[in-house]
Image 1 (cartoon, rainbow over the protein chains, first blue to last red):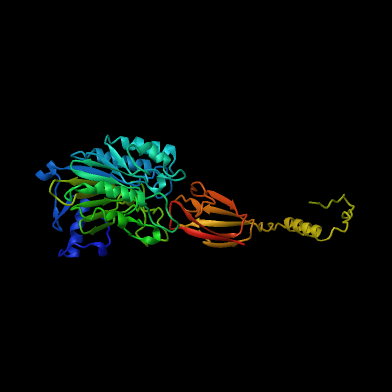
Image 2: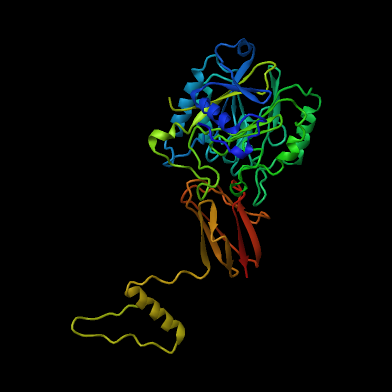
Length: 313
Length: 126
């Protein structure tokens, strides 16, 4: 079941406890959507609206190259994730990877990750994590995945009426700081969305959370607020992040923030350990803490319908 | 290093030490310590900083000019050690990897991990 910080939920008159009970169903793969602030079940199989819309998947933090006790076989769990994606019906239109593709930015790690992910047979849109840009400021990441990107690797694209924006917030860290977007990227973002009508659904992907979840562990982006000010006017904004290897959610007006599970290993909840390092759990629990996410856009439905699936079962 | 040599049945006189004063006495003490199994004292111009639980231990360190500081990563996550004004930067340090830098000028040097920027430390060189 996804964990989320109760304090960050603001769902109008819906009683928080009842909402949490409803959210427990999310673990079984039922898709929930919210209309007018009220959650409603949205079954992918038997709704005409779903047939008219399209779906895509998000995976994150595959950390190919990691080999410590928390998961000695990250290639295996990534492969299992891809197998689950291949079994989805209907098939997603494409895949998003929200970064930390590799563990140490090594060429062999990039090779292995690409090889496994390619097996899904889908177009993949990546953003790098801080583990993908070690030593060379992102050069090897860009060489592989930077086609069509600007600056240090940001880009946008449109699919089925939805505008996707990929941001880089893992370069040029300041000492003691959180993730960083930088003035040039924020200026680009402002221009990128300028001509769009407010009814265009927006999806933003970036590796580090675009809101401050836990500053002591660097879980946040210092200049995110400035960037998000340029999308506040839109009716539906979905922010998809990775980095923390667990699901945390926040709703702020028309913006829904979601971090994602890793396909490699879990991390402790905010402040519940000395540090945000790899969390070793009993073998039978590992695959309950890894997973993928399926998102569906149906025209007229706001926001996107989101289904998080665990690797187990 | 000089050794005492004994012929069977006939103790030999220790080599006559000319008047060289303290350095020779210090050397003798050093050898004696080795002989009884004690470890030689750590070099005064080397210091180690451990990287563990996403922090530098110790986070504040004061050393004399000429000290070589070695960072050792004990975490299961890689870290990169970089000085704020690009004086030095390590490659990616996986578990067990080390990086050393010799401080040849006095000053206060702030450094951090470029992967996990909330990890910071300072070395004051006097």
